[in-house]
Length: 229
Image 1 (cartoon, rainbow, N blue to C red):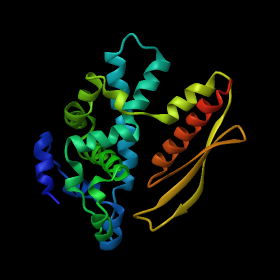
Image 2: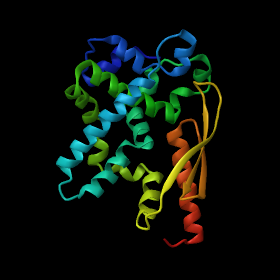
Image 3: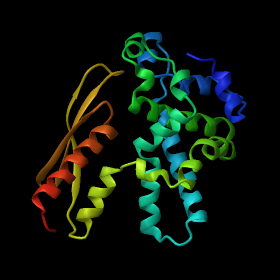
Image 4: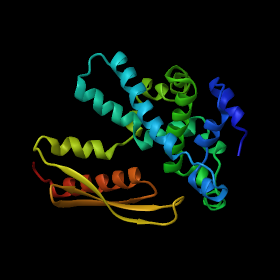
């Protein structure tokens, strides 16, 4: 685990409340072992902040897109696959505080863990210094992906599935049907239904990942059957 001050230096940050930074880098596996707070609550904050920052950026830069197009593009750039790339761009995994089991299982490279940590990191910056300070991060590791039109690498199966069926006024529902494992290493099984029809089932170490897998399977099923809506 690297000294978190290097992470601050990389982005030109200076936390007033350093505990916020430590919490942002604390996975639940470490929190459970050390009886401290994990980054889950900060992840909630960061998710909302990233939505705002991306919405503002796309509104200003993509003047030829309508509301629907902007919504789709934002979804691509804040989906889990995108967050993982942002986290990797700044080696965020190397700064995380992990429990022994997660460390042994190569947790620093685990996608869902990296995505959550990136959101938590943004959330910590927002609570410590406000929205303006968050731009230091997104300008360095987020906006470059948008400018290079890298969203092709971020396949958001949920958005694709929603777009495919929405013209027929069908309704998609994602349901958690199984949840196993300790709190720091859970495995989720989620099914996606079109109206009452089971379309796919996905498994992942986060609900986001499981939902994406379920949507991917549903899309493949629709492609095979060439279903018309």
